[in-house]
Length: 602
Ligand SMILES: *[C@@H]1O[C@H](CO)[C@@H](O)[C@H](O)[C@H]1NC(C)=O
Ligand SMILES: *[C@@H]1O[C@H](CO)[C@@H](O)[C@H](O)[C@H]1NC(C)=O
Ligand SMILES: *[C@@H]1O[C@H](CO)[C@@H](O)[C@H](O)[C@H]1NC(C)=O
Ligand SMILES: *[C@@H]1O[C@H](CO)[C@@H](O)[C@H](O)[C@H]1NC(C)=O
Ligand SMILES: *[C@@H]1O[C@H](CO)[C@@H](O)[C@H](O)[C@H]1NC(C)=O
Image 1 (cartoon, rainbow, N blue to C red):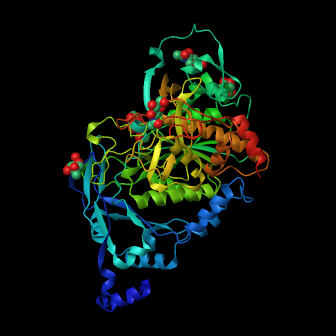
Image 2: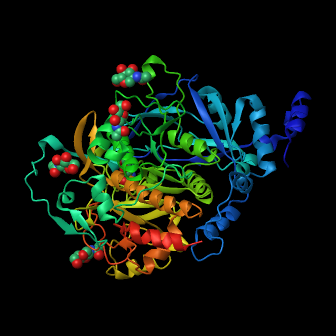
Image 3: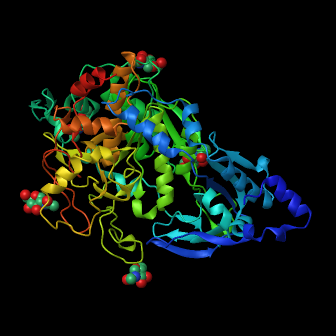
């Protein structure tokens, strides 16, 4: 029986709390193992503030998902009929009974409406509470955990809730979530500064045929510029408009800041027409964009994405959070999950940018399953509103690319210590487009291109033909036990991922990673949106059903990458093959052909 807030207060005032003992039977809701690399330190200070996020079940998510499949399927008559912010919120609204049960529980702990922040749909509830109180509410014990890389988190390995609440709460975080959403090691690596690179100034200015029929400057083999990408991906001469309502964005986390002055140097060198143009910065949860500390990741993402899409209005989302926790000085900063802060913000935005690129991820196995599912449902909501999301697929091939023996790659975290391939999340979510990497001209798979199969998400329908076709090509028994052949497979597509010429702090560097591939692919998606919106059509929204429909019929819309492989976990990884493969997906985009296809769609 549900006890309404009013009834509860009446009972409590009457001293009759014992009348409803079942309400107080606390049962463990979730436990976790501390992932490798983390060491338990002191108990968390009782006055440390935590932004507790309560995920209330979305009562009708399957209906939202059904809409999403229909409006994203190019063969469906509803293709492109995206839902409004209000329609999405209505579909994901929690059951009133769940909301009531959670509110009553919060009230029992002295938390009233004034202390509570809710998402527009009401499916997320946020309260800021000190550790001491959280421990009491959740029957949990919070400790400081330190990672081998020096980062710290305040977490518990177990928490409980009154038994009657279990059906009304999907999960509460931060509790058991130990993931480190990160750019640097997994999806980003420096090569030498350009000044130290062998001079190629005297190299003859020849060009080589491109896979998309045009020609590509020979220098693009080792020196990727915006011009190279437009040549390679058949978009030379296409100029988007600034004022169609189309927008493009890159996300930034973990104190990765994008420099305006570096952007001008980059534009001067690579996109002269864009000089003096800039991007809008949206700060979430106190995110900064400190101009004296430009970050390689943020500069790469903004320079190339906005270089490709100029003059489409551009936004850099900088999300603060996860401030360094310093136990010695008794820090009372809150300990957030910055990634949820961004999702929270963007889900609350009625008209988000139509294309958003993210180059941050973590090992799927460090993300609690219910958390991964709920975040993935958030991406589905964005897709339903007409937003295309690209994520870099990772830089460790079939592993996580972590060279640190303390965080030994490819070992399962479930207590068995088994060797397994490690896909990354969020790219493993079926509702985002995972972008793998290529290198050189003609293109070949780059060896770090993240690829593989999710252990959390099942194979989505859009992969029902392409992925089994690939699996049938594997020799029987290949990598048996190392991957889940029935999982959502990544990447979906690929783009160049190394030797990107970027300005950082006034100097030119060549940098790479699938961090470069995700904004590159997103750039061409944004140009496709420009073409569609100018033709009076909707944005593309959730891309994968379209990508797989196109990829399967070999229209030349993707340059199929058939050489190279993605080693990891002590194996040679998978091979790039004809058709889809877990190294480069369907391959790299041919903008000219894709544009004709998307303009022919409703
Ligand atoms: C790379 O291309 C840029 C821009 O065209 C040029 O300034 C630079 O010299 C090239 N660097 C190398 C090493 O080829
Ligand atoms: C950029 O702005 C500067 C300073 O206002 C101006 O001198 C320059 O001509 C502008 N360049 C372009 C390409 O608009
Ligand atoms: C920006 O970074 C500089 C250099 O690290 C630092 O001195 C300054 O305090 C920072 N500014 C802000 C607003 O955080
Ligand atoms: C797995 O590895 C952890 C950390 O190295 C160790 O403590 C544990 O005993 C191992 N478990 C098994 C079953 O080998
Ligand atoms: C990749 O291709 C090589 C050369 O054809 C072959 O020997 C190897 O078995 C293939 N690997 C996989 C995983 O299919």
